[in-house]
Structure formats: C-alpha cells, structure tokens
Length: 222
Image (cartoon, rainbow, N blue to C red):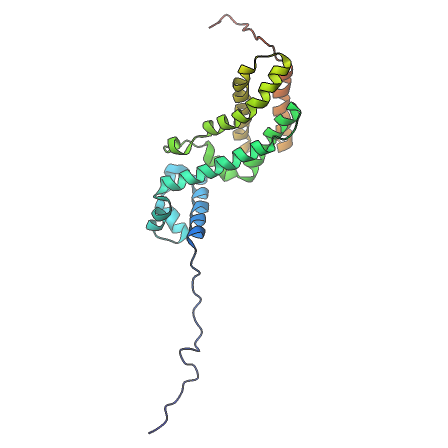
C-alpha cells in the first residue's frame, strides 16, 4: 500500500485571516455614544437617524436599540453626560474666597468647557423634542445658578442687601455668561481670557455699585 504524500502546507499551517476584534458591550456602548454625540452636534436630534448611527458604527440598527432603546435613549444619555460634565466643571472651579475671583472662575469654567467640549455645548444649546426627559440648557443654567446663589447670598448679607434676592441675581449673572458663551462658541474672538475679563468687568462693577433698593426711572412702574 503506497504511502500517502503529506502536504507541507497542511490546513493547520496555513496563515489565518485577521479576525475582527469583537467589542465588549461597554466598548460598543461607548462607541455608539461617541458617534451619536458627533452627529447630534453636527445635525441636531431631528437630523440624525438610527440608520446613520448604526452605519458609522459598522453595526445593524438592532444593536443601537439593544443598548439605548432607540435614538431618544442615546440622545438622553449624551445630554446627561454633557450636563454633568459642565456642571461639575463650574462647581469644581468655585474655590476662591473673594467674590470677584469666584466670578472669574465661573466664567473661565464655562468658556473652558466650550473650548474643550465644543460638540457637547452645541448639543446642550439646541432645542430638542425630548428635552422634558433629558433636561434643557435653561435647567442646567438654573442648576449652576443655584451653586452661585449661596455665594451671592453671603455677599448680599455682608453688604446689607436682602439675601432673598440672591437667586434672582445668580440667574442673571450665570445667564449673562452662558449667552455670551453661545456667541463666543462660533466667533472665538476675542481670546478666552479677554472674554472672561470683560464679563467679570460688567458683572463686578455692576455689583460694586449696586443699590440696595433700586428704583425705576421711567414712567412705567408696574
């Protein structure tokens, strides 16, 4: 019985094709969040589709639904993360003892976020039909103002003003910085430090000359 010839390149010796590395569930979730964040910033909620998110991730639509239940769920997580990032940045920056420096720190914190997380800020300032479940930019500003009003309350009390008005002034100050930040998002001029300086200049000198009981000068009184 003749011997069987052995092929030197048996199936076990043949080079294997490079296999695609399979992502873990956590890795896939983060990938979808990153892709969704970019698309929501660029196109808005309405302009972004599950199909496009899935295509850019190289997966099928059911994978997106499996992780987030749909576009609304993905958007909600993206917004929640951005809101926490900004809120933590602002509240963590408020470390100084002098009120004027605290204003500078708050202004810088918002401008730093806009500069470093531009896509996130674009998402936050957009209106969305799912805002009720994710929160809005206005509600975020209100959260930040709450952190500021305690500081203003102490300052008002020390100056003989009514500390009950601190929430009103906190909303006004934080709102001024936030709206300026929206404008600066696109123009990026002047430089960040100069923007912060001008914001604090207006806010501080306004506070410095604050009247304890301001009066209206026009004809309208109610």
